[in-house]
Image (tube, rainbow, N blue to C red; front, side, top):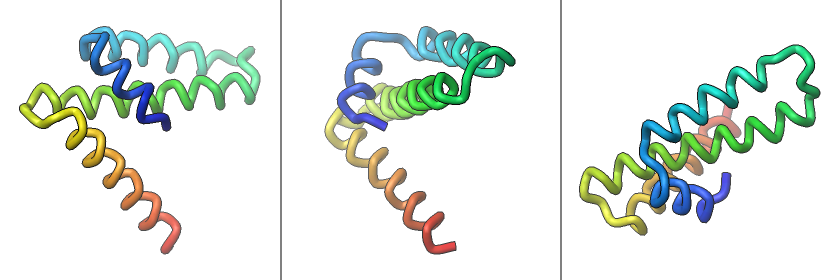
Length: 86
């Protein structure tokens, strides 16, 4: 996940555009002829788009871009910490 990518996507695309991109990428990644390394790259892109959608929702809800980015990253780090504790 790359925060600068989230910021760029959420500033320049609508949520609907990002959702459409997600659908295309998910179908592409699910194709039998797509190699594992390609699936990993697509997975990273999907992850970035999902982060941008979350961040856009927070910004559209009135949160500053900085606070939205910090909030999202704190949730991600908290999730990673919980997963590692298991």
